[in-house]
Image (cartoon, rainbow, N blue to C red; front, side, top):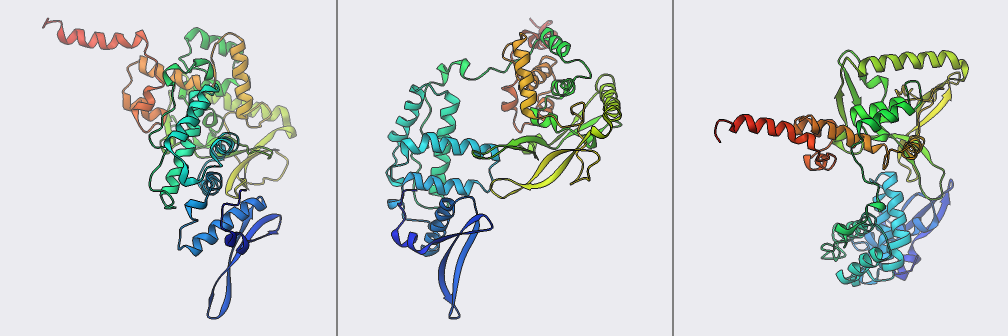
Length: 424
């Protein structure tokens, strides 16, 4: 850490270890003649504890203002901002944000004082990244990190009066090569038939592929669908959770249960009694037969309390042979391996690679969601119904999933012909 904090702050803040975690403390004003101190722990490294401690001390000394912006480097401010974002950002977001800061933003802009950043410097940064071959979306995420951090410097930190990144735009969107990001598309019917020939009923991946196509659910949502949320009488399937991998640099990953991507993604989806209901009943019976076949080697899935790398509580997903005592509530998943274990997102993604190798170009699991919404559009489903089924909060987002296909023109042509045939 560059010592752009005041020497007094660095001298006043002390760091120490307790139970394997780093802590900071500093003396505050006496109360009733007695010495008082402020301290906080739970940091993974001494550096994190020191940065947080200095920020807390300078906030204390300045009545809430963290530090004098004139003496703070952008690198040090990014450290402060990143510590703040740990409180409410998802773990995968934090992983990508940390990588962007460490590998790109700090090396290029970190040595500048926070107050000396200009629109021209930030514009040069994004132009240089594009010139170096980084995809438009990748540079846009870097710029977003910079801009959101500088917004935090304006409020609540009150270190800046304006955001120099506010009007900067990443160049070359119209020329961004498709090869940088695999285009999602509507998978044609003959290609879908080919996929389900590769993964027939009884195969581990048949059900997630079938449910992903029928319901348009995301990969994490699909593998987290549970029998508890499946009402076969009312023909309703609830989407309440997703399974994600917890991955941070320098740590071994684990899988955990978290809420869907947005508030609108928490939804209940209707299904039919002719296709999906018989499929679900047949698969539930197959799972029962699998359990009898594997006997004591069959696995149950459980939700176990754990903490992420910021110390926040999470719901870890673990598989244990059924003879073991239950470590937590059972997670009765619809999509499982033959031995009962849950399916990892990376395992399902690898099968998508096999599908691409088999000739279904550009395929990934999200293409099933794209296909589902386009099929609804082809059938002239009401826009609000498509949006609700997708779990989107605005129709503009939904429209990005729906391909403009010739079939979609037939129903509008039929309607307008009926209206004007006797007029023109």
